[in-house]
Image (cartoon, rainbow, N blue to C red; front, side, top):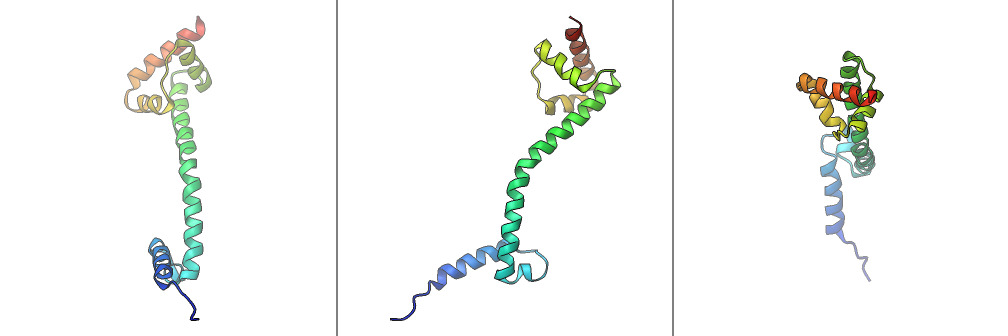
Amino acid sequence: MPRARNVAATRKRRKKVLKKAKGYFGNKSRLFRYAKDAVDRAESYAYVHRRKRKTEFRQLWIVRINAACRAEGIRYGEFIHGLDKAGIELNRKVISELAIHEPDAFKELVVKAKASLEA
């Protein structure tokens, strides 16, 4: 009995990998053996970093808020605690955007946070 080879499926699978490896340097974009490893590694990094991106953005927002708070004479932790006590529920992304684009509104938040800490 002749050997059964599913050439169509194999070709399709290999073309799919080589398409993903388009633009890679050297053999990694041309030869299936090397492209497969490069694509696997790239996809695993992409998976991890899609999750890590959320952490990095939160860190960025916190740094920006802290810088704006220090200019107003309050620490970041005290500011967030004051907002929490005042019942103001804004996420860090929004607070960061306020600090950059609407400094007057941010100053009002700082005043409210300080007032709730004193009370």
